[in-house]
Length: 170
Image (cartoon, rainbow, N blue to C red):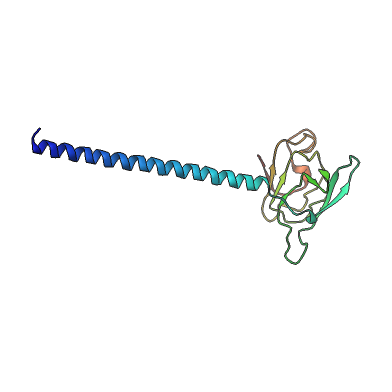
């Protein structure tokens, strides 16, 4: 091989090598970014799954099943109003399972989101009356609720009393 052919081959191999390094580097960066994004998403999902509303925001009574019924929600407790408009219905508090939301328990609280898990077996009529008038109330249902909870065997949430709402199942 003459000198001109050798230089041309060396340049070609150099350009190809540089291209491969750049390509592999880009693939590695994209792969790492995807892994990082997936970890961030999973972390955020874990955080959301474990969010709670402070127990002192709720008023509970012991029901005939030796579980708790929520009969009230005070979103004005304390000087800093620490009871949010985004509510996570607790599964358990004070050693008792929370399995019911009583009539008018969340009436006129201007709630924005309510997350309800499968521990709830009863929701009384008008439990959320007066909510949804400023902006739609979002019910987030985790798991499945008994058919009588969503309205006499139907999928209607209208008996819960919110004037404007959407429902999302997670």
